[in-house]
Image: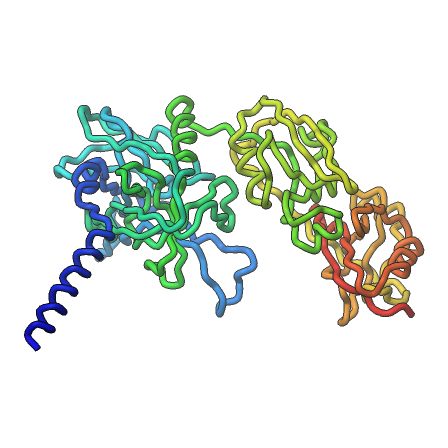
Length: 476
């Protein structure tokens, strides 16, 4: 009996040692790199409302609302018996030294609107910092303290990261300085709502308010990302954290250091995702690329010959696999650069050369709501909608040269369109047909099989998009 227990004890000890041998040891990494991580606190005079949490399109339903939070805890101004001459809001975040002479990288939202920035080192020294430059589009800021012979991190290549690989975060969650948390890479190249220029690294590393701007290390002690956002219902950690890749950060900080701002490219197109149904309609082998639903007048794309309904499949030799790829590729291209494009047009691939221009600092697209249209008499077609020919006045008002006007949408309509929309073209099996009259449109529909997959080019206000319809009603 004793022999059996002894053998069991030895087996458990051996198993424990084997498990420990397989688990990573982060102690050396923290000892070598922890001193380069800093605590950042800011003060801001209360003279403007604090920024609201950005709304995520398509997630208005309270029961399914799961939004991304930028996570900096703000302390409200002290309340006294009467008005004070200087009320302040305080916020906390993290950052890390990238050079021995005091340059610090952090998130733009950590220092946004700050009147005073204080950087605290692990040896308890504190320095006032100035902002060298900040880029809201990637949420990266470069700040500087007046010091020398400081510890500094070294950067790694986030492209070499593998899903499942161990990573470590160091920061100041809830102002607990130099807190170390670890986890794995959950996914790479994540696209988040309203974030067009960053292919985020998703991890399950515990990240909380105050971790913003802190480094994400690989096991070699190299910074591979900047912790930036969490996905949460509560505002606290729920297992989904997102970091800005280090290569994106390095490109941005270089420009911030040189010019204090970031110059990005643009070609002047509005795009949408290529779904499986759209790929089928356009005769593409599989869902890939970015579908152009409008081309801005006078833009580089128009000058290069890019057309509405083109699917951009490569940019500067890089494959565009999804909608989110193109803005990143174009945005990272220096203005004035001439690059090759490959587009899928009317069933075949074509090569185009475009000269990239510069994206303005703040580019806001104003969308006009369609004016109510008087209902026209007519019978619904095989899509369950009633359409009318456009008058010359309507064409001028809607700034179109062709199309048919949706005047009524029945309850059983197959197409996701609205009254007042203009249907400009129909695409089926790679064939793109401009719509000019009601008679022509309804004849096209009548000639199709009931299981046909068709795509409509729809103009709504100033926005153009492609809508796919799978299946038609029986012929009348």
